[in-house]
Length: 284
Image 1 (cartoon, rainbow, N blue to C red):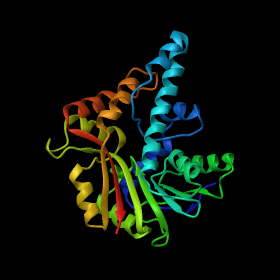
Image 2 (spheres, one colour):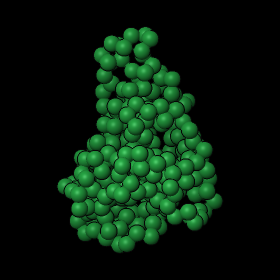
Image 3 (spheres, one colour):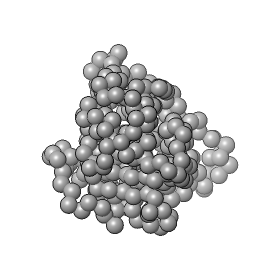
Image 4 (tube, rainbow, N blue to C red):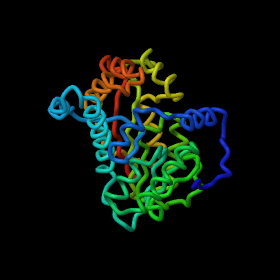
């Protein structure tokens, strides 16, 4: 089921981004999701459990690596959810740039809350709504073909809003203005994102390679805090996850689902030009 089938892209760039994700069938997303039926479009954090991989032996190594990568990406999503505050069944939350829906389903399971996910990719929305129906939660978790900069949802309707690695597709001032409007006063916003390090200067060659690979525009770290301050979002927690995500990338580089972008991520993380942050902020 596709919601809002009359959607039109607001720019040529949005059309290009939607086309990219509509065509995307990457095993690093699909094979990992097949492990548990939770499909993500983000990376992982935490130390690799080498004992589980070693115990599988040579014949079972590939599937053990896939399972471990999926465990690490689930750990990333759980950390995001842990920073959303005290939510319950009566609350409504927004997954902005929801992909195939993994974090939305985890939020519904964790809190019992109502979840709306939005994406400009018709393929992602259809897939996620199909998953909601299969899980029997279509009345609680719904995905919409909408622009997260202009969702049409009512002001103050959400107790929490998050972006899980999707802020690099939009202008931050526009994004945080939209989120500030949607959040109830005292509501919580959380993002996990890659950003380039202002101390390094302009985006490094490795960061530029990441931009080209994903058709995105990675923002400077300072841009997040400036745009939040301008839109009534006050940071309450900032966690540098750079060191925590490196083991995921090192394992992925040696896996059957490597895409070729792994070296660029590792180079940028190691040389300090790129950082992986969680930022939680309250709407005041």
